[in-house]
Image (tube, rainbow, N blue to C red; front, side, top):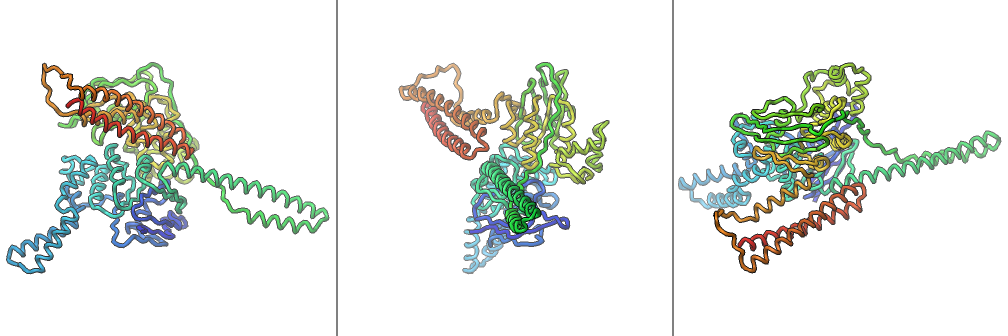
Length: 631
């Protein structure tokens, strides 16, 4: 059954420039669709048309009858005094309406109304109320709030007092609780921490309705969508797979189209040269050859069908680097910071050496950005100190970009920031960051969040540095811009410290993980995949070990023969698990090497899935053996 049908959709905000130019597609019930395209391609505009917030200039949109649509991009305005809990409970408007009618009927029956119609109506409403989970609303709210890291303290706060990211999280929770038929998710992961993103992935996979998601989180797309629609020049391109399939297939289509174009151009050149010779010979006396030449030229016109394929112009600027002498980049000693009664971290003692690439991770609100601000001197610690190496020069990209004079144009911002730079040099640098033509004369205040990040990077990359600190560098950026930043970071050889919830970015660059949890930083000197394995193993161990009170000065019994055998099998099982983990890492490495070869990638992916299944089976066996050994 077709859930969403879009036909010939056109929408423009400037005369003669269509954002959507004949967009046509259909989405079946239960499909998970990723909507891709560069920033400004019209994806959010399409969502607003689907929800009725905007009117299309031309074309039609048909939503299946009785299908309820929920959109996460907008944050509704709630009455003054609404708490987070009040906002979450607005998802149960239908339940509230039924409850009020049931209360009115109960009052009527208590007053002596015993008619069959009243009793029958109350019975119908009661069954319906129970069927839609009316008696379990508090449980549902708690479950969603826990999954999205909405703490009990936050639930009691006023909604208006929250940050933009926190409001987005609460609104996402409300949308999930509404139990809609069609989920429209516009960049849902932008303000979520890693735990909340993983929870949302699991929810989307289990959601019974239709999902259309706009996202630049490649891991999220790979794990949640089974079809991609790319909005390109106002029209739709279709890819029957997840993001990885889309990336490989898009490159294959480009190369195929380029070969077709080059083949046609070679044929055209050959025919044109032959026609020119025939015309020349005709002028030399063989008049009849003109007719053959004209015939060839008509054939050339019929051949001109394939347009030359193009790619988005890549940004090529790289970070300027300063030579680093010495081993110690930064030494953090006994650092602590609190806000009132809330302690963010304490006893922090860490050493950073040259060339290290460190990912600082943790839930929202644990103090990651505060730590970076302390390192940059924007905040003062309550105790401890930070010491940098004598030749260290730092560049910092904050999470929230601010400019002192947002009324200035882009080119003026560059001229004031970089003394001695000429207007032409400033325009050239801006051009390298895809700010071209009249765009350089726009005021900074009209730029989107992603464009402001790009402008700040443009200013940073002119400096010679050897310590780069990034706070959520890929937020609000489309995939092309993310890939460009990744290439720039790949080429940079200095020390790197970054906060990110983009798992692709962390996986690609982190050689060391700092996890901030419960006011303490735990240092994992390993890659992100290895960190995930260690954390999963720790969780398995915590769940497997029985909670028993320790008894002092009591000898550990050797146990009966069954227990001793279980301990031997436990050791063997652990060895097998280590071997499987090594094979999984090898399969993941093969997937990375084969990213542009779909067949090899598919084989490596299938191999990894098989190994993951075996590892899960071994983990189950390990738990049973552990119970037998400790019995």
